[in-house]
Image 1 (cartoon, one colour):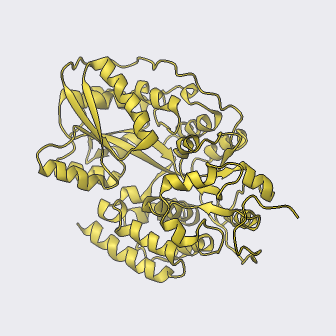
Image 2 (cartoon, helix red, strand yellow):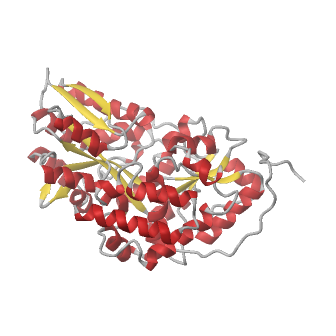
Image 3 (tube, helix red, strand yellow):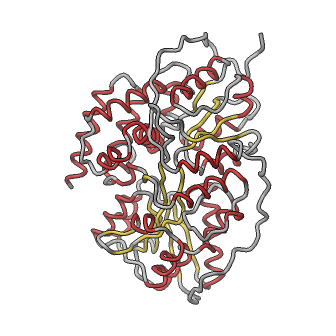
Amino acid sequence: MRTPLRTRPGSPLRRRRPHRTAALGLLAAGALALAATGCGGEDTADAGGSPAPTTVRLPQLKGQKLQVTAVWTGTEQENFSKVLKEFEKRTGASVSFVPSGDDMSAFVGSKIAGGDPPDVAMLQQVGVLREFAEKGWAKPVDAATQEQLARNFSPGWRELGAHRGKQYGVYFKVSNKSLVWYNTAAFAYAGAKPPKTWQEFLDTAQLVSDSGVDAVSVGGADGWTLTDWFENVYLSQAGPEKYDQLARHEIKWTDPTVTRALTTLAELWGTRGLVAGGGEGALQTEFPESVTRTFANAAEPEAGMVFEGDFVAANIADAGADLGSQAKVFPFPAVDGGKAPVVTGGDVAVALKDTKASQALLTFLASPDAAHIWAEAGGFVSANKNLDLDAYPNAPLRAIAGSLIKAGDDFRFDMSDQAPAAFGGKPAQGEWKALQDFLKNPKDVAGIQRRLEYDAAKAYQN
């Protein structure tokens, strides 16, 4: 009998209970592309740090100052700073960056109330963009940015950045939020293989758990990760029409389709040993730490898998693991016999001051030039169809980005990001808080549904 990678006290073999399977798929090409790269790919060499192409003309802005805000910290902030430095180099402007924290709406609101908003904000929620546009905080883009958007982005991405017929935003950084990243050593020891269905995923998680390693690391301290779990299960299980209806609150959160999705999630969240640290431990784990637990000590990990978008690649690099050998990825599994789902998200740049410098930055962010810089650094995917895929540093990211471009407008955007911020985009309230409570007590399906509906009804009425 072999010694497990890491022995967890009190970890007897657990009997599997019957599970259901689920889903609808979007961007099926993405799943095929990931499969074609061996769920990780062998080409992990750095793309070389070549100079960004010059495809867009920018005005000279010497002496002008620009402040940009985003939720990004750590590696993401560092990589975005490279983009801003290139903008400074080309225009002569001076750009400063200020982190907003998770509650962008509150941060910007306080700055506007004080009479000094940032010049440009990178918003994570479509709902927040609409709110900012309604309040007059966001300013429409100029003709130069419109031209870049028309040239480089599909209609679907342009529409997500528009409100009431006016274009306000540029989707600079997007994501495929339907990926599961796994530690190859943990899988090899357990004899596990990447699953394709929810039932196989649960069986694989149990197999990894029985080998002595907690199966799935969940960053439950960040409520947005839990909304992504729900959305993937729901899209796959209920289908795109119901997904759209729930996103617009045309059906209630007490609907049977929500009951079914939460019950399915409870099969994972409520089974001992499948979530690292259990529900309580997961609620104390922030997203970056959930990746670190899976890959920081690649030979003896604390967890075998972690779910989240393509941006996990940057956190894997921070953890010191090699993407392609120690870390690989598979598409979120299909539920109930459907196709594998793909939910997308993104950060949209909007001008909060209608100045020459603000508009020039939006124009730059809409070009392949800006996307090229962060793509080379990794942990980034662009919806810019004219970005050369060779800019991405490895085969997995090229596959993820290529499938997104190939799919055109055949995708569903993150549901919580479409909701009013009070429901889908604020810590400690709305959907974030309700799903955190559900992670703590996965048996309370009906109670969580009532809470979700109460909070959604209030938010959508305002």
